[in-house]
Image 1 (cartoon, one colour):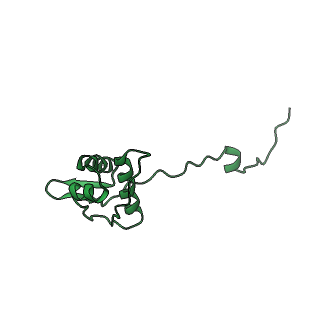
Image 2 (image 1 turned 120 degrees about the vertical axis):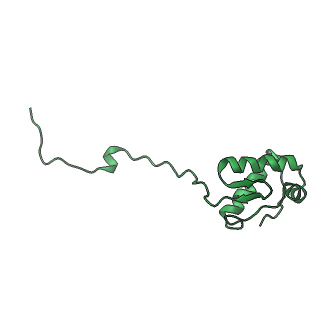
Image 3 (image 1 turned 45 degrees about the vertical axis):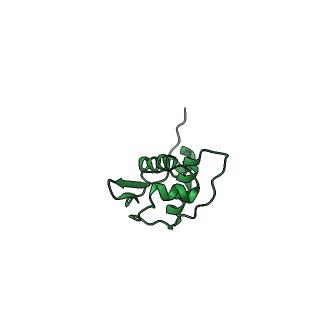
Length: 106
């Protein structure tokens, strides 16, 4: 579950809160379909305004980490987003070690 780890002044609080929730999901502390505490409770836990909490939660909904339903609140999404994988580039001569069976001569 969420620990209420203190937020710092070095970056916007809604981004820090969103990151803490995202990490809790990645670590399995929050499972798919788990409900999140209300924005008011999260605000009290982290010592921030509930509107700041709402901004963080709405960003996570837009990214696919959470879903929201009227009167049910926010829950961890069943289908979590795929994080971008490392971009791997391989040049043609590295990927295909093909040598022709013939040679052209002029």
